[in-house]
Structure formats: C-alpha cells, structure tokens
Image 1 (cartoon, helix red, strand yellow):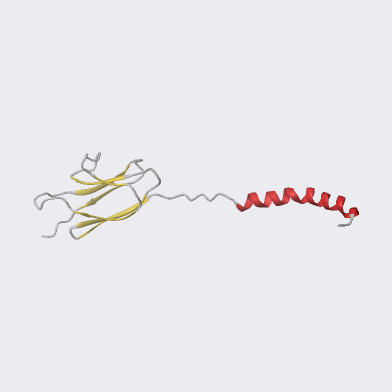
Image 2 (image 1 turned 30 degrees about the vertical axis):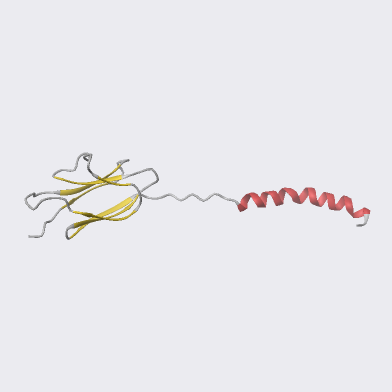
Length: 118
C-alpha cells in the first residue's frame, strides 16, 4: 500500500467505525408483544368449551355454582392460553346453575347459565 494513502485510510476507518457499530446495535432490536386477555365460554351439549388468552403469570378458575362469587378450592385451574373442554359437573336435579370463570388478576370473569337436556 502506498504510504500516502495510510492517513486517509485511518481517517476513513475512524469516521466509519461508529456507523458500523451503530448499525450492529440496531440489528438486535427488542420485540415486545402485548397479549390482550380474553375468554369465550359456551355450553356445547354436556360440555363447557373455553377459549382463553391469558397474560404470563395469570391463571383462571372454572367452576359450577348457583352464584358466581369466589372460586371454591376444587375449581378447575387453567394456567395457559388455549382451547379447553370441561364436562358439566351438575346433577339433573340442580336448577339455576352457572359455570363461572374468573382470572387470578380479576380482569376476566364470566357466568354462563347451564341448560340441561331434558
């Protein structure tokens, strides 16, 4: 290499190095996805169908009751988003029953009346 080009090459390297480093920094950008919690609970024959989207760390409970208050200890627990099927656990003699849903952060709640086939 011709010695008279060395200073120009050094200046170009010093000037272009920050641009190259900045370009590498932007290549590794963070992606943040916000999951909106939502649920759909419907009766399908003798089953309850639940489609649910939960935020990380949030769970939901599902249980039969005459009134939807706090979930009992034996309530079904859902810890991940997805589609679920639950058999209806009430006797034919019980009337005015609901299937209740509540998330651990109280952002989701539902009460679906249960209709027994006669």
